[in-house]
Image 1 (cartoon, rainbow over the protein chains, first blue to last red):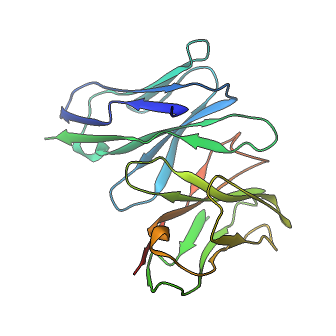
Image 2 (cartoon, each protein chain N blue to C red):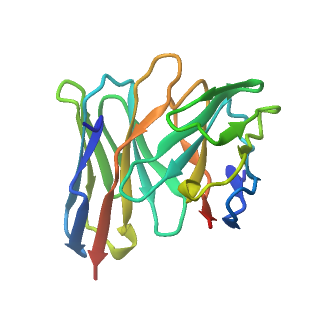
Length: 110
Length: 114
């Protein structure tokens, strides 16, 4: 069983739609990261959170530590939001390494 | 700031050849790590370092070697390339001893072993 599960694996939306990507994890964590990967490009950090909610522009990330669940929301989606969104958790401890989900491929149609 | 710089961006190797993937960061980050990304799988940790002179193995270290002689550089060496090492490789860094703060990634190296 994967320690970090994302859903859906693929998502197609029309421009302007509200989008939700989910991440569930089975381990105790000290932090959760949401990352974005454009086709052929590198990976950029969107959020790092350990509790509550964070907002940056049209992106909102929430986390529920008790339920071991996080969501990434995109409001008023745009074709430039098309990318793979990756959830990764930091188990904490002395190493602080990340465990990654397999990613959610989002395609926003004009 | 350049952030995390990886070179080369693309590379084709023949089976048995060796090569070094370069990774450099200019943010004075203690923590650096290498991952490989394969289709249908999440990124997997190859090796990591929590500071100059300190390295450790991750989930998939076989066939790879690392060293950390300076804070800035963390090269990944393929000792004898195999087709199973065909993958996209990412270097990442963070302030502190792990990903307790924002993660910074390089642009990736797409490696094909024929």
